[in-house]
Image 1 (cartoon, rainbow, N blue to C red):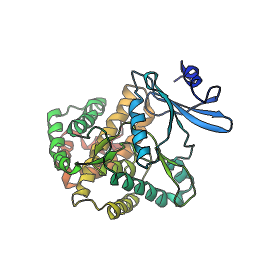
Image 2: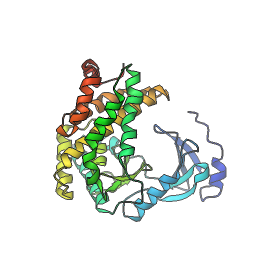
Image 3: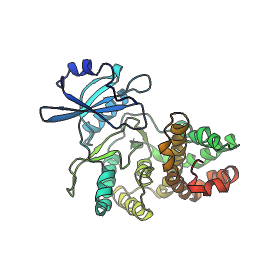
Image 4: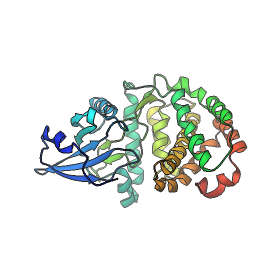
Length: 329
């Protein structure tokens, strides 16, 4: 992507208090969004460019305001022009949870505990005014695996059986996710900002939540504890799940539903990372697939995932599953 500033950036800033600010591009993510840090008079802000038709900043603004109004730490919206894809927001700084733990490994347990506590607070709120995480969405997401990964591996698979297996596996949890909680959908160590690093009770800032839906409380736990981008030990995963259970007191089906949504999310991610490679030329995500695949295999071993596990046994050759944790060749 070009380092040139997008067309219209100065016109947008000209209508804000940040006219004439120093503009520095920041590293983007896997989307079409771009980010810029503005500096002026000793202060800073972030500018997000989410240009139509590939992006729509309206959902980000909608979710950010709901989180902010309900006591969760989302960046304040300073100015926006949704039609042209501009959103000016509060600057949370550069200290992500991921880098802090890399630099201070002894803090890992404590920082993850803070992230769990934030989810507990979120889940105690009434669900936000967002669309449901229903079976249609689950199906669409798991189909990314058969649409992208399987063709990349030149596999001839039973597509009808795939959908039937997921319908059978996921159907039991649908009733248990009503009325539901707000699901941020990408809650992990690279999307959690440490606003007061080093403090035992430092605030955590939330980012990348524009796809929020109303669904099952286990989903964001899976996103955090089966992280596609960094290794989370099974021991830490266990400890954090125990912490969540002690605070939230979920029902007796929670372990099974965690496995269901773990498998669902990890299958989706394998499909997305393959698509980023095949469609968008972003092959750096391929190196993350083995980590995701390993977590997926653990989820598939739970009895709740028996229908999908049988499909994998019948359709994905064992040598592919064994080779580097399912890494695309």
